[in-house]
Image 1 (cartoon, rainbow, N blue to C red):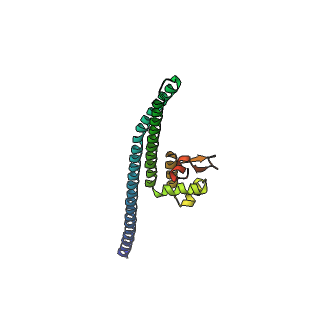
Image 2 (cartoon, helix red, strand yellow; image 1 turned 90 degrees about the vertical axis):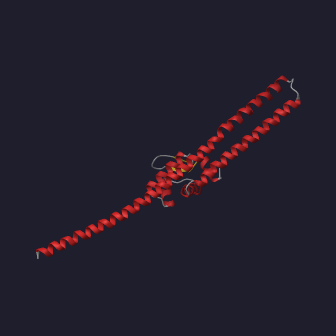
Image 3 (cartoon, helix red, strand yellow; image 1 turned 120 degrees about the vertical axis):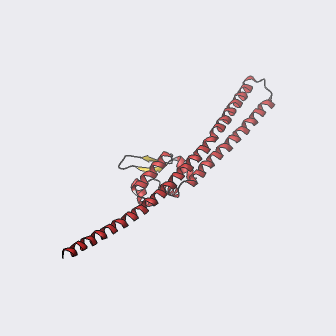
Length: 192
């Protein structure tokens, strides 16, 4: 009888160990999946950083064109004030100013399109969140979570990142406030 009780106890212990083993295997699978998601998220962040670096490369060139435009304006003003300059010179300076302004506009358009290209590379979830805010006009965290089916941590993380990028902002008081798109956020959607 005593041997039978020992066998029964061993069998019970063995069943518990098998269940623990199954649980640990499933947990390892979930951790592997989470690691894969984190790796992809890091890759996206690295791509975002690269796009920001590329768009910042345009800034010195834009500033150089602005500086050139200011110099040409100064020449035009000096010519108009002095009254001694030939009309042809003034027209030449004005044409050069217009040409430089057009170059500046083209550079700004290039920088904007690069920035909009970055928006396309943002996770589709971010685009969905921006579109949700655009369609609703405003939304609380709870409304965003509910409307988009996001978990609390995901919603908080995404909202922080969208705020950090200047695409959304919080309006009102802590308990009764809501989020709206900024002009930059509207611009990213092509509605601003």
